[in-house]
Image (cartoon, rainbow, N blue to C red; front, top):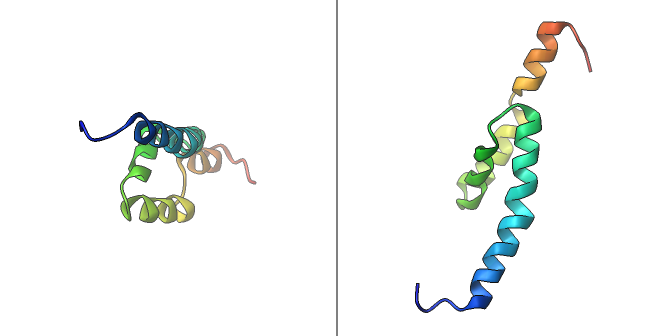
Length: 71
């Protein structure tokens, strides 16, 4: 850790903010815990997670179906 400069930490912070914060909001609005967005930081697992979230039925959709609301 001592070999990392402030530039490395700034780049990590920018990537974190630009990638995880919007994903946190999206997963929260979809009805999932926002912490699921942290999985995007893991290479390949994050890629698979994006595809899984894209094609699975979201809790918000399930609740809407129960109430009889259609899109």
